Length: 386
Image (cartoon, rainbow, N blue to C red; front, side, top):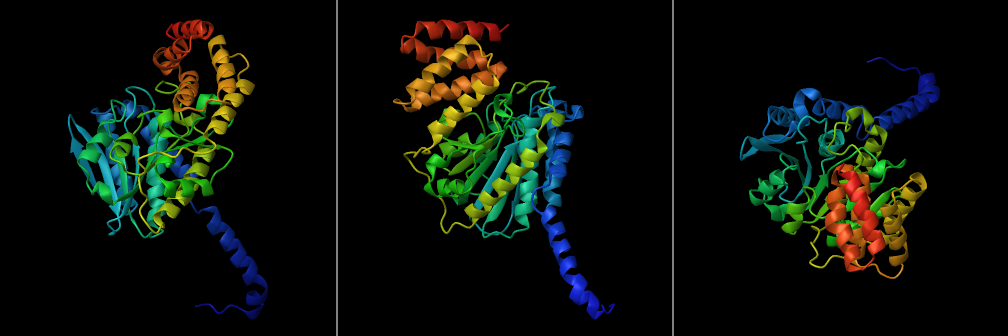
């Protein structure tokens, strides 16, 4: 071993250590390029959209299996009907575990980058980071198949759990990540499900930022893989950047994802998971939800952001926004908030807009006897189907 001169120890070593610390800090946490690599592979045209039951989905499952193995997890395929499979990985020997999940299947012939290659990329990289921390719980990572055709992979898992559901501390689910809701300039991180657990609400509140919207999961309904866990009263948190104009379309390409934001939010979620892992007791699922105190204010802030950035909104949406901004001052019922959330989702997602308007928003205004709004919304629904 080389003997360092005293002058190096007194003059050079502090600077050397400082530089080393900066270098170590700069590479800690989930890395942007690793996320990009996973998304690029999964969204490649050779996988043909990763539609469940097709060769591209099998290729995606094999890729995820390999990534989990490389990260040091014990991995298995959980086969179910018609050539479908979940990829399940575990690290740790504690019965109590945190389950982290995302679906890897997508739309036939579409890149399906934000929905949900990005969520799978987060799953892989968070698993790698969390395993290295040796947390006081086991980690179970699940890449679900066949979400797009009815939450079939996650439903199969909760009915045939690889590890007992009662041992799950929290189910963490990612879906539709990396693009901005309604294609707004700022990307909002939606956090749903804390209304069913006081402990989880407490953890999330520690990390609340202006660009997070904590809301009740009922505002979007059972639209992703958190729903089967909720139905079995497993405490859960659902994370999403929500839908956009290219949702389920050819424009959902990997190069359009905001990877720095995806990285930032991955590292934020990592800190939340660490805190959940270190809770002294397993979170309890509440039979009666306690909705976030600032839920209405944050919904209104998104609506105002839409108005500011999209001054040419169609008449139907303008009338609904005007009505809701007045109404929620006195009526903060779940039905009113569901109308607000459905209106925002309809605006964000052209492929779903006519369905949401026809079956949720228009009936609500027919019931309220507001024919002017109903007429404008019907015109908008017809226009979106052309």
